[in-house]
Length: 270
Image (cartoon, rainbow, N blue to C red; front, side, top):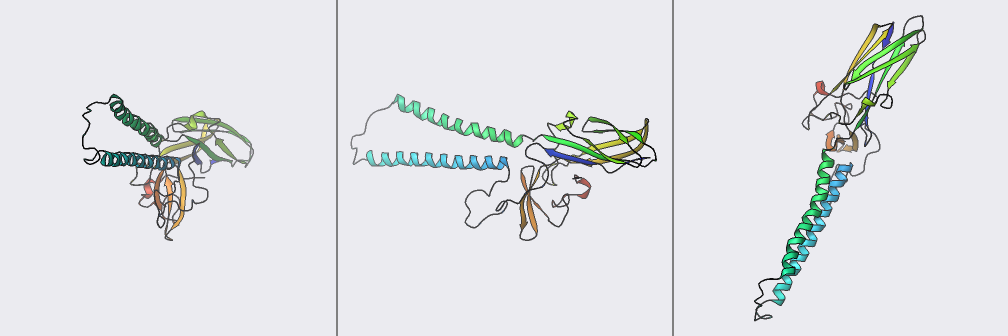
């Protein structure tokens, strides 16, 4: 008899990655005394937001200084005492072209990086899905098991020779099954931040065309990064799909996100 043990569906994005890991980023997710500006960025998207914020800040400062300088010049050079006989000039072609062209250039300089940032925020990272299952032969004779299944609309098929009482791990990596490279994965979100779409994985082990065992699993795809190990000794922060979220360290990975319904958890079966 073949036994198909609990399978593992591992989802990992090529960039930046779906699994929690790495050291906590010091200072991220929490304000600091006398802090100016944003908190330390934890993702490429947030790094671009901080850069765009600083770019606009310095641009506004430059425009403000320029306009202030013009006002001061006008106040000093063209007041009634310094300029008792005002000019009767009504047109200046170069000046009119400049005050029309310069604002357009400034708006284009703002628009180009802002649209780039908007598209970056809407881009869902691609994900590589690897399916693993343990197949065990409980009989006293060698057999060749056929492992078949479906996940994310992809059909999986593999023949596995097994000696008597042998257990082997069967893996379906994206390199062997290109369909497991998800270009637009359905992303799982904590409650209150979005939906919790799940993928269904079904596997069947058979011998000589007769089904011997089946296994099913539901899982979600998400990008989770540890940001702050502890916050006031009770919580820690995590970046979920480029959004900062508070989690409870005394819970498991799925239950750690506050307010998440147990029935809607995505599973991390590593």
